[in-house]
Length: 316
Image (cartoon, rainbow, N blue to C red; front, side, top):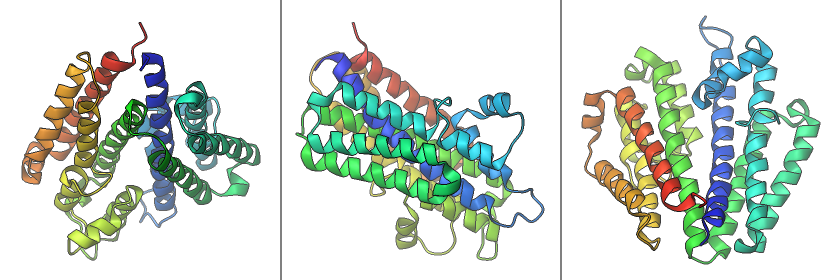
């Protein structure tokens, strides 16, 4: 497969996954911003968290000067001048899909094209009339539909593998960043969650719901969410679809099935990271310090993304 085609497929799925992850992030932050804060502010810190995670807070402040709920929501969701907005992610995904129209199925193309057309209509209408929670649910639904169309219609060849690579490298990065941001925001309360600790309980529960892992948590564990349980579930459980371990297993599987010698550095790194997670215990993670461990692994996932780019996606 040509590097240009592989790159377009990879980034098509990566931008779609990013749009979904941004919607999950925005939805949980918006919901938590509406809760009573016991004198800890007016909820703007919660709304600003997605900007901090995506590294766009400085750009927002440069353009708008101060934190303002309505402007932050628009900037993160519908701002065509913010390359990290959901709007721009869906625009980029559609552009990449158009470039490889002949390598994806009709169902996939119709889904992503319809998503972009609806996105333009929502942007023209504005979040005030559409509603932020409804908008976030719509983004997640469109992403689910695209993945379903992909899984159900495309051949299991190289195109499929590059699409899956884009999805899971983005998902792994998002899980790490969301967990790190929520852990840092909870501070001391992260390890003091009890049945009577409303703040810790709802913030951890919101994180689990943002990663579609709340039901998994209640099935596996008893009692309230705690750092130990949350870290084990979202980092080391292979049976939780959005866990770091599940993402790395899929990345390792997809890379190992690609032909050629040029991909050996990416394949080797993916195998090493998969093995590291397979044989790491949550106690070892917490002994190192959760924030430190997450920060280090974010860099490793970035290195894997760079290795994939160098091995397969560079146009020569």
